[in-house]
Image (tube, rainbow, N blue to C red; front, side, top):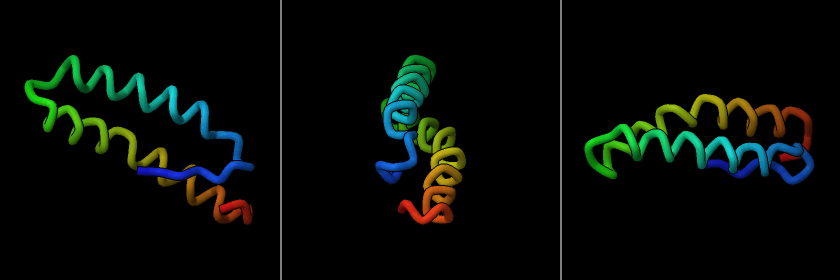
Length: 60
């Protein structure tokens, strides 16, 4: 879903956020498919902003 530029400094924090959001989605969803849809809907806006910011900063 994302590839933050190495110089943005967001890689590790995004991985931790991804893990937490995915764990909650898996716990609260009736199926793995529903969990993945919930996860993507929750993460895409934030991740898109971070990746776009990296591109604007010339690091992506």
